[in-house]
Length: 200
Image 1: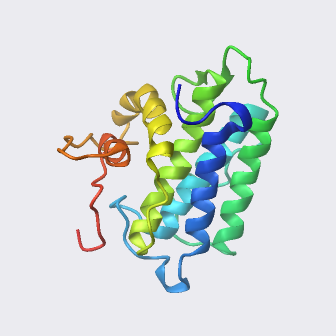
Image 2: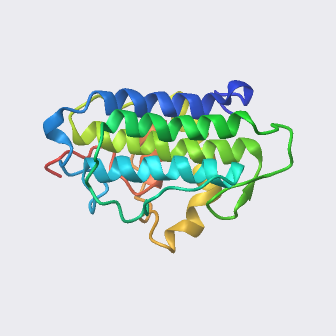
């Protein structure tokens, strides 16, 4: 299936760790820098990523969803960004820990709103990992995406992204280029330039 197995929700765990490391390394002066998500700064990208984690948790448990619109992030946080991100990831991790991995399907907040446990958990992971990349490149940090993580994320992206493009949730895919590795392939599929810099 991939380099990751369903045991331990490896894809989700690795994506959460990527977001955790990146957010913890953002300098205090960098939260309003531009990102590859052209309409959003670093804080807004984090708010969106956190909101999606809470949204997946809410779909699985019936608990309240995010108290803000992840698609209209304010760009202002009252507390510590790392704690904000950690709370959202913890909610998602707890929710997925309660899922029967042999279930035929589980509820999700994104179309088709029901997925296999592997696809649903990987869809939750996709948002955390790719937004970790957005924050990393915006703040001059090393990319947290590895080929081993990109491969299963591309698999789930190909399951869910096309319907979401029509809603503006994802930009149009970029054309592949010679020499693209697994990370670049994933990023281009999601409409991101793998070579993006703040001056792009």
